[in-house]
Length: 497
Image (tube, one colour):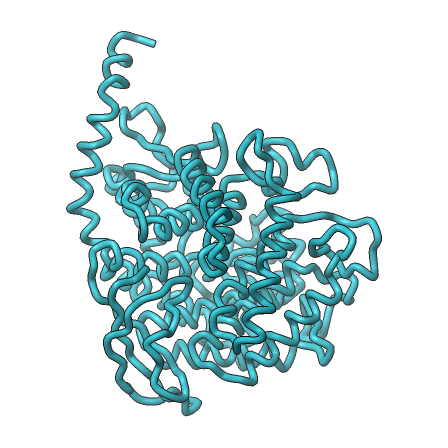
């Protein structure tokens, strides 16, 4: 290390402070309007185009990067007419080409729900309703099981093939739609699936959820996301909205899942979570799901559950974990000795001032990992000032490095521009949740009022949860009806916490 480098690093605290203060002014841009513009300009047009020729909420699982939908024949033959981002996709994506995945219909349904929630556009609510109807009437079975994938419109899996994670994500779109509308029929179907999961995937001996139905396999994968994504996809959002008796039962089940996550998957030596524990390979630093994304999501969900359940010890554990991972994940091109991500247009290079890595010693991150790290920092930032300092530097980089300025939506990796933006594990879920939380917390940081839209039968109550948060609803007024006849409400919220 040269003397010149030593001087730079000795000045690092002062330089960091200077950069943080300089971006505090720029951060005013991200107080809310920037995130609303992001939805209106970058995200909603892409997803409206994606649904333009789709009947009855049967959203396709694969799209070209301009939001056009290739035909099944194009996908299966991989002809020259197939867009290059799908024609050249890796094998794990191509293996999904024959299928329409219920989890992706559900995720896209969630995306339309967020677009309505933030913009009030009835068209988005109608698309969300169509997606919910597809899940309820085409994928949901009478016993509460959910068909995981279709081929040529017909079920393409068996009950023993369906994972508890896929069933959780089948709930995502319905759960957000219920949050918006309070439709009792939708809630009844959510509870039906929920009861199926906790009956058929519950391992009584190990006190956790299995990956495949417990009755079909005695020795099977033991996965973090089998537990975690029940919380993430629907339980944390819906539990406060349930009738008292059901609310208590779900709250107890969330506590049970949190106990399993910490007891079985937390690795205190490295202060992270294992992605799986059925094989010793899961302990490796580069194992599947051994990334900051899954770890920060685990701490974030633990934190949210702890606040709901008033579990002070769990909340303190989760807060400490969030702080630790944010510190380890943060990357900054302060001394110009870290190459800028290749995805960044040179004219925006100066806007990339800080970003998230996805593991110790790994500087890149996928779109969903970046979003989860931002969201955990933003959530903690509502209560404490320190996490906001990261966001004033990582938020600008999101817009510069991830957003497709030409066609909309976001790229999948901070250093890879041009790969498929929509496939069997990527669509609008994470980008829209990221925008919603940016909008809510950004306004919260600046103590600014925000506007959200609901479609409930009666005027929304002041106690209405605001996604994962709480806030003071100071005004709610009727603003029309949806195409299906739902009354629309515009709510003004202050003092988010």
